[in-house]
Amino acid sequence: MVDEGKVDWNDEVIKYLPDFKLSDPWITKHITFADILSHRSGLETFEGDLLWYGSDYSRQEIVRRIQYSAIRNHFRADYGYQDVMYLVAGLIIEKVTGQTWDHFIKEKFFSPLFMQNSSTSIVQVIKSNNYALPHFRNSPHTNSKRG
Image (cartoon, rainbow, N blue to C red; front, top):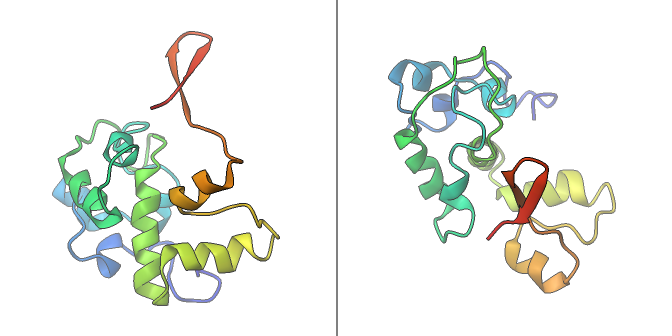
């Protein structure tokens, strides 16, 4: 989308999602497309993951609830991996392209790469019987199935 001139890396998120909010109003106003995709929003690693994993919240509701997550890292200075900011990017994609995020990902990534068993839908993934479950570290050097 950047190469097509539809968005710029330095565009503020609120340009596309005026109702988007983080707990810090200044960051809300200044966070950019590049910031959300490079994990430098100020949120800690995995912040917001429990909003979506195993929940029935819509993507919009998850993004709305991000405003209640505390900013604990330095904005643009600290790295904190967040899946939830990719939901924000997905909503921007929908605004800019008029397509659902799911259709956009299929059209731009899965189809050109012949990824016929990949999906953005958990329902479709589970139907395939060919998927990996997420894991989390519960103590040093061990991983447990999440969920």
